[in-house]
Length: 340
Image (cartoon, rainbow, N blue to C red; front, side):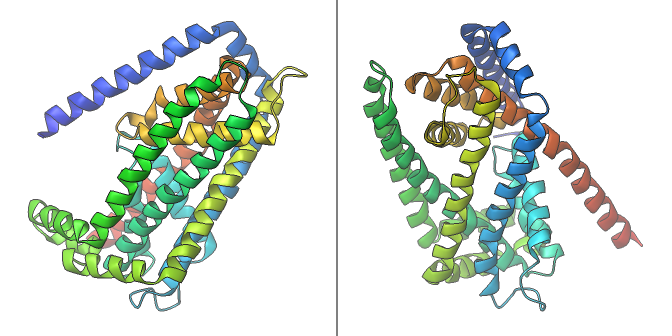
């Protein structure tokens, strides 16, 4: 696809996402939604603080993978704070830029190489962490569906079979994705990218197609390291429940606020909808639909589900804009040092 056509498709997807979000807001009641958002108020800072904890836990999923790689930095894996920095910046790229929620992974690999990790090992660790995140998200979403089946409001349970079917299809796609990696999918893709980019910039980032594939297979062969990575990612999904619980507690009227179980269901379904909408910039509209639909199924209002989604958008802006500025500063400093 040509760059011009790609931009057109991105703009079209963005426009549809905006229309879907506007439609959901109108359907739920704009005035009530504004009241809920106002009720959260400065609580947004607490939500952002909890998200920093989630990002730190997710960032630590890289450590078991980097600790076992011979191409790691001489001083061992990067510190927890350095890993938090690269995860923070990668999340900002995925959330705020039209990169199909994958550009942040490239940025993370690039930042790892700047911390002294060899290109192939950095790229393989980021890909393996992405795979672990998808696998554990399926477990998280399945658990959310189970809890929803127990908590669903009367008359709302008829949607559960369709949700379960969608989850099964997603699980099959992830299995095919993992098997493809094991059979050299990334080797073929990396060689293609190597040829398109002229080779130099790609090899600088990944060490070359064959090296990247060999490093990735070695990571998957170390089950203990990969399972440790999965454990960290699953912990990150579970911690996200606390953010939703806090938003519900701040935004809901007395007697209608959901507890931790409702927060668990909303977070699992909302994150699944966001991942399903990876091709739409920021999953605009799809994330909102996931949270609104989950809230209705739980017997809460669609407006409350939309409040959760929009507060998360505000959190992404609050944390993401400084991260993009930090990325610009890092790249500018690197450019100046290379020019000097």
